[in-house]
Image (cartoon, rainbow, N blue to C red; front, side, top):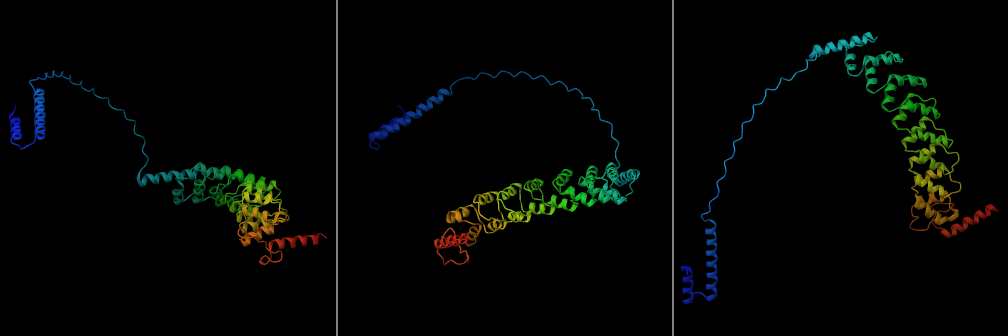
Length: 352
């Protein structure tokens, strides 16, 4: 028995600790002794084997000498600095003179990076003469081609430089000009063509008008395009069955936001005596499909365009039954049912 254990037993005998406390202390001493014995056993006289000697790595072989890389022969250098630029400008000017053009040094500097001698010759061959350096540069930058000039003349357009440049800026092609003439715009000038390009005129719209028997000119085509009148909208307007319809009235319908769905809804009502002005007024006063349905429910077979417009103007058709008087739209003192009876009576008298 160890000395620590003897001391614990002596303390129990003297009454300093209880038997349970003595038992806990003895167990703790036993665990410590077991741990010490295990550590001593692990750290016994065990001898680790010696590591074998690593084999020697042979030296790397010497790198062979690389052959010298061949270099291409030096290219002939262009002139650099002020003298080089002047030489190139002089050479360019001489080439232009040989082709029959005489430009100042200032013009040659502005042309040098845009206009080739071949381009200038081709324009002259196409009949464009007396061009200065600025005009030639503008035509080259904006992609004006001699072929365009020749074909435009064949279509009756003798265009100056400014007109040629503007037409190319706004995307007017020979195909566009030819189609416009086929659709009836025979006397188009450059200004009208440019405006049609600026406002993205769709010639399919003109075809739609032609199909319904209406003729439009270039100015009207621009107005229609400005106000977003499309071929489908024209077809919907045509479905209303209006007589003596004008292009100006179609433009007004586009201005006041009448779309295909609303026009089809108006046509479905089969309103007697419907005019273009009635349709435009419906657009001005915000008539929609819901109001059309409410008006039909209220008036039944007696529904007229004026009834719909009056309901839209007064704006309270959702809240209270109201039918404007035939004699005064602002008179609200009449009973709606009595008004309908009065209208029927007046119609009966007219038929008699």
